[in-house]
Image 1 (cartoon, rainbow, N blue to C red):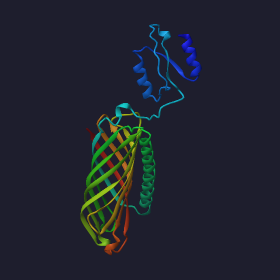
Image 2: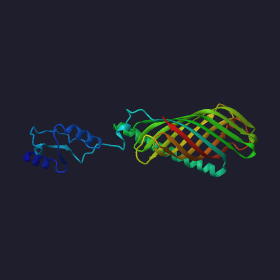
Image 3: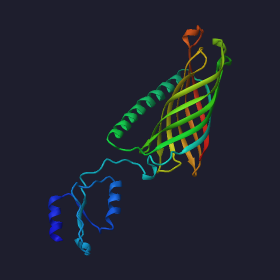
Image 4: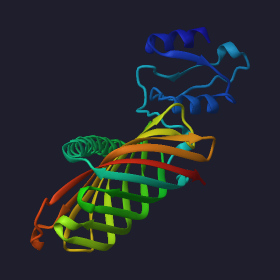
Length: 286
């Protein structure tokens, strides 16, 4: 009635009054909830009158938006993660000081930014805000390179990447295991065997939401081999990955590789070597 409408306007001067029928109300309430609004907290009263003008009710308070995010409701945690099979190939070469600079800069950025997003994700969980769902990739990776003095290295293995999505950002971890061959004549080092790497990665989606999106990725992996002569091995990479249709992908990346020899083995020569890296990758989404 006009009296009820007037009273509601006085009680909620900043609220938007929406006229709906009993049948229309559930759909409207669902739409408002998905767009960040919540009910004002009082009982919602629906008129029994068949007259549309008398169906007056305070549905939402525009001043009290619910904590929301950029998620598509179809990409929530209840949905299974996308799985990709990728093949990536990288070439690397001895790069000196420039490679060390690239390695340090990319590694520092990844660690700092990843930590910030991880803290934000934990805070969101504590207040009941859901992530946009999980994701995972499986990749076959290979990398090879040459340096002065006949030095060479080759890494080939399987990489598993997994994480959660928050808005347009993917926060995750990457692990890689495989076979490595490292040959350094100047340091009298020639080893072949198992290696493993683990570290954080970040992806930022580009363009509108899609099951096969374009994205920019940064990652920083560190590990070692089964040989005592080799200390820490680490990779720092950035790159773009592009979708082709609904399933195919391709990408480019650059970065740096660090091979640090173990101090305990008494190997003479330069104990920490940096190599520049360039790579191509392609794959198919299942």
